[in-house]
Length: 102
Image (cartoon, rainbow, N blue to C red):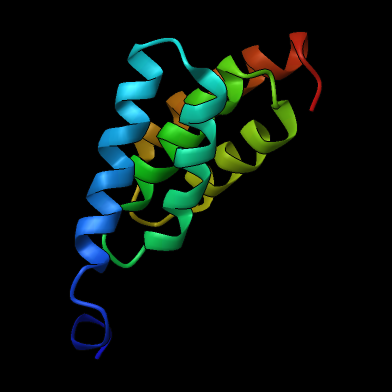
């Protein structure tokens, strides 16, 4: 069981999540993006929508549109994301990537 192998893993996940939020709100987009990308290692702890929404947001602000596109693809393909949210993601992705090709 992974929880027994690394009891601090959950703490690491939430620390990175909070650090991403802090950097994002402070306007430190590169640091926020780096932290958000690391969150993908914690899909067993944090939900897909939380992780990839943050990745999409931070990579958009840091103008890494290829990574942003991958995050949107992950959101649209995830069974955890509701149909309504998938549609919103699809519409937003279309608006973003018609102006900024990945």
